[in-house]
Amino acid sequence: MVLETGEILGLTGSTMTTLMFFWAIYKQFFPDQLRVYIEEYVYKMMGWVSNSVHIKFDEFTGEGLKRTGAYNSIRNYLSSKSTPCARRLKANETKNSKALVVLSLDDHEAVEDEFEGVMVKWSSNVANTANQSNQNGNNNSGERRYLTLSFHEKHREIITKSYLGHVLSEGKKIGLKNTERKLYTNSSSCYYSDGKMWSNVPFNHPATLETLAMDPEKKEEIKKDLIKFTKAKDYYKKVGKPWKRGYLLFGPPGTGKSTMANFLEYDVYDLELTAVNDNLNLKKLLLDTTSKSIIVIEDIDCSLGLAGKKRTKNEEVEEEDYEEKMNTHEVYERSKVTLSGLLNAIDGLWSACTDEKIMIFTTNFVDNLDPALIRRGRMDNHIEMSYCRFEGFKVLAKNYLDIEAHEFYGEIKQCLEETDMSPADVAENLMRKSDEEDADNCLKRLIKSLEEEKEKVRKLAEEETREGSEERKQS
Ligand SMILES: Nc1ncnc2c1ncn2[C@@H]1O[C@H](COP(=O)(O)OP(=O)(O)OP(=O)(O)O)[C@@H](O)[C@H]1O
Ligand SMILES: [Mg+2]
Image (tube, rainbow, N blue to C red):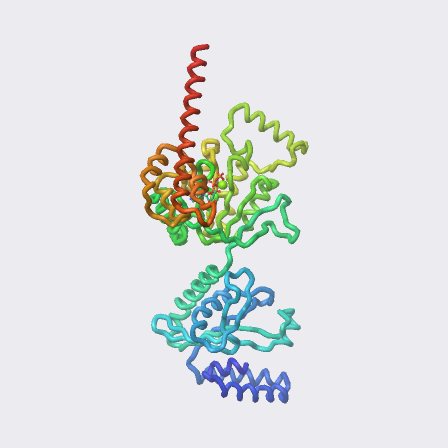
C-alpha cells in the first residue's frame, strides 16, 4: 500500500523511506479492520488528485504456482531498458538461459520508457503478503512482486492498445533469444521416469546456413523460404492454414540433411519413430511439443518400415501377415505406427494446436516413400541435397582452410564436375591433420581422393559393361 501510494504521488528516495517509517508505525498501532477502511478511502482520494493511470502486473498467477507469461515478458523487455541506466539491478540465475545471469530491475527501482513520444514509468515493487499467502496457499515466501506501469491518463488509448502489445511481443522475443536451445528425444517407453514424454539436452550445434556447402542459389531460396515462414503468422491465419511447414530433405549420405535441421533458432524435437508404440502415442508426442519448434524424423524410409513404403501386391500380403503377428505379440518389439497414423499426425487436427512448427523428414531414398506422405501440404518444400560441386567446395575451403582462391582451384573444379563426392567426404579431406599442415597439402589430398574415386567409378562401369555383354552373349 505504501509503495503504491508513493508511486501514485510520484515520490522517490528519502521521502519514500520516511513514508515507510510512518507506515510501519501505523501498522503497529491500528487494528487490521480499521486499516482496511482507511486504506480504501486513501486510495479513492488519491484517484481524485492524481491524473496518472497505473496498471499492475503480478509475478505469479492467482494460484501463486506459476510465474505469469506477461510478467516474464515485461521483465525481459525492461531488462533491455534498465541494464544501461538503472542504478540498482538484480542478477537472477535463470534456468535454460544462455547467459549465466539475467539482469532485471531491483525491487523498488523504476525505469522510464518512451513509446511514440509518450513517456511511461515502470516500477518494480514487492509487497509483504505473509498473512494472505498462508491463507490462500500462495507462494509462501511472504513476498508478492509486481510491476507497475504508470502513465498520464491522456495516453490511455495508445498505451492499452499499442504499447502493451509492443512490450509483450518484444519481451517474448528477447526471452526466446536468451533461452538456450534444446534438443529433445523421445523414449521407447511412452514416458520418462519424471512423467515427461520428451527428454532434452542443451543444443549448441555450430553449423549455420552460411557454413553449409551447397549451391548458393538454392541456399538463398531456402533462407528466404524459412524467413518468410517465420514472419507469415497473419498470412497463414488469412488463408486458413495452421502455421506449419514441412520440408523433405533427400539425397545421398553425407550431404548435410541432418545438419540442415539446425537452421532456425528453434528447439529441435528429434522424433525416433521406431520408439513410438502406436498412433495414439505419436499424436500425444506431437501435442507435447511447443510452438517455435522443429520436429525431425530422420531416415523416414527406414523408420516406418513397410508401412511407409510404396507397396506391391506381395508386400501387402506380407503386411497383413505382420499385422497378424503383431496381434499375437510375435513382433511386439516393432513400432505399431502406421502410415495413416503418421499422415494424420502430420496434418491432422492436432497440427493446429500450436503455432510456428516446422516438420523435417530426411531420407536417402525419396522414391521409396509413399506419395501421400510427401505431397505438398504435408511436405511443402522438397529439397535435394546433392554431391559437392565447385560452389559448395568454395564454402568448405573457406570454412576449413580460410582460403577463397588457390592455384589448384581449376583442377578441383573439373574433378568435382566429373566425380560425385559428398560434402562430408570433401570436408574430411580438407581438415588439417595437424596444426602445421598447410592448405596446399589438404587440397592435394582432396585432388588425390577425387581422382581415386573417379578411377573407382570408371573400373566399376567397365566391369558392368563387360558383365552385360557376357550376359547378352549367353542369352
Ligand atoms: N553440405 C554440407 N556442408 C558442410 N558440411 C557438410 C555438408 N554435408 C555434410 N557435411 C558434413 O558432414 C557431416 C555429416 O552430415 P549430415 O549428417 O548432415 O549428412 P546426412 O546427409 O544427414 O547423411 P545421412 O544421409 O548419412 O544421414 C556433417 O557433420 C558436416 O560436418
Ligand atoms: Mg542424416
